[in-house]
Image (cartoon, rainbow over all chains, first blue to last red; front, side):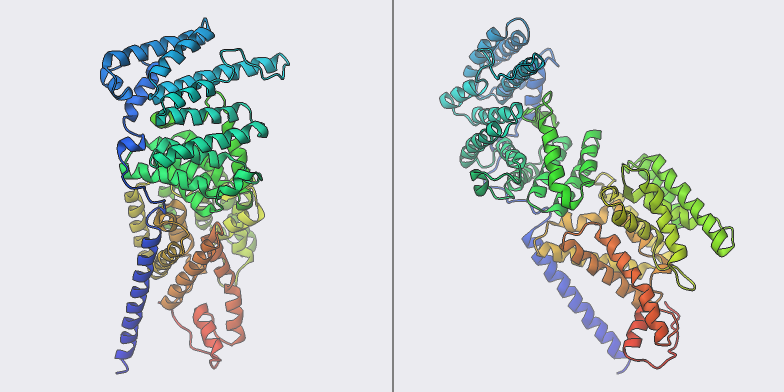
Length: 355
Length: 275
C-alpha cells in the first residue's frame, strides 16, 4: 500500500499534466494556428491574387529595361492577356522605343508615344509600372536640377506637369481594370516620395488608400493592392493626428500585409526574396501595432528565408532596436527607405524580381 | 566536452550556418576572458589554470551578444569572469558566468548591447533537430537531462499558454526553440553544474520555474526573458544558502533546504547526496 501510493500519485499527476497540455494546445492552435495570420478570403485563385505569371512579368520588365534584347512569344501571351501575339509584340516594341525616346532626344515626344501605347494596353501592369517609373525619374531629375540651380519652384515642363497621375486617372476612368487603378494609386504614392512635405504627403496617402480600398472591395484577394495599402498604412507617421488616422486602426498595416502573406503561402508563390521582403514589412507593421515580440519573430522568419546581405543587414538593424525606441527607429528606417529615390519603393519590379 | 561542442558550433556557425559574427569580436572576447581568468586565478586562488571555463564563457558571450561598440566585447567577458570570483560561496560561484556577463551587458550597456538574431541556420529544421539531439545526448553525459527536459517541457507549455492568450502563432511562441540563442542557453548556460541544484527534484523544479518565469516575462513582452529568468533564479542562490545556514542545514540542494527550513526541520538535517 505504502509502495503503491507514490506511483499512483505520479500516474495521476502525469494524467493531469497531459490533459492540461492537450487542452492548452487545442485552444492555442484553434485560436492562432501556426503564424497567426489573417484568414484568406474565400475563392482565392492564382489569377485573382495577381501573382500569376510573375516570371513572364519579370521577362517583359527586363526587356523594357534593356536587359534582354528579345521577348519569347509565350511571355507576350501571358503579359498581354487576350491580345493577338502580333499586337502584343508590336506594343512591347513600341513601348520600348518610346521609353528610349523619352530618356534620350525628346522627352515630350516619348511621353506622347508612351501615352498612346498605354491607352491601348491598359491592363498591362508592367507597362503602367514602367510609365510611372520613367516619369518619376524625369521629375526627380528635374527637381534635383532645379535645386542645384537654387530654384525652389515646383514647376515642371508641360509633358511632366501633373503626370503620371493625369494619364493614369484617364486610363482608370476609361478602362477601369485593377491594374490601371493600382498604378494610379501608386502614382499618388510616387507624389509622396517626391514631395515629402506633410501637406502633400498626407492627402496623397489618403487618395492612394481610397483608390486601393475601392479596388479591394471588389477584389479582396488582389495581393499587389493589399501590399500597397498595407505599406501606405505602415508609412503614415504613427503619432500624427489627422482625421483619417481615427478611422485607421493601429493594426491596419499588419492586417493587409498579413493577408497578402497568407495568400502567398496558400498559393505557394513568390521568390524567397519576395517572401523575406514581405516578412520584414510585416514585422515593421507589427511594431506599429505595438506587438514587438511578434515583429521580431517575422524579422527572424525573413532572416531565415533569404541570406542576401541586404536582407540580413535590414534584420540586424531592426534587432538592435530597443523596445522603447522601436517605433521611432522604425519611422527613421521608413524615412530612409522613402528617400531612396534612385530605386523608389513603389517600383512593382520587387514583385517579380523579389527585390 | 562542452568546450569542444561550442568550438565546433562556432566553426560551423561561421562557415555554414550564417552566424555572421565578426571574428575580431570573437577573438577579443576569448582573449579577454582567458587572460582575466588566468590573472584572477593566480591572484586569488594562487593557481595557474588552463582557462577552459573562460573559453566557454567567451564563446557564448561572443556568439550571443551583438553590438557596434567593441567595448561591449571587452566588459561583458570581464564581468562574467569577475562574477565567478567575487559572487561565490565557499565552494562554488552562484551565477553562470556567460549569463552574468550577458545580462550585465544588456542592463549596463543599454542601447549598445543586444542579443544577436536567433535563428541562424536558414530555417532548416533538420539542423535544429540534429543540434537538439546532440545537445540532449551531451546533457545525459553531464547528468543534467532532467533539468533540460523540465525547461524544454515548461517552455513548450508556456508557449502554448501564450498562444492560447492570443499573443502569436506557434512559429512565434515555439519557433525560438530552433534558434542558436535558445540552444546555447539550453545546453550551455542552464545546465551549469555549479549554478544549478544537485538533486533530481530540485533540478526539475528549477527548470520548470525558469520556464514559467520566462513565459510570464514573454507574455509581458519583456525581451531577453530567458537570460533574465536564469539570472534571477541564480541570484536567489545566496539567499537559499543563507536560509539553509540559519536553519543549521548543510548545503546540499537549495530547493530542498528551503522547503525543509520552512517546515522548521530539526537541525542538522541529513545531507542529500543528489541524483
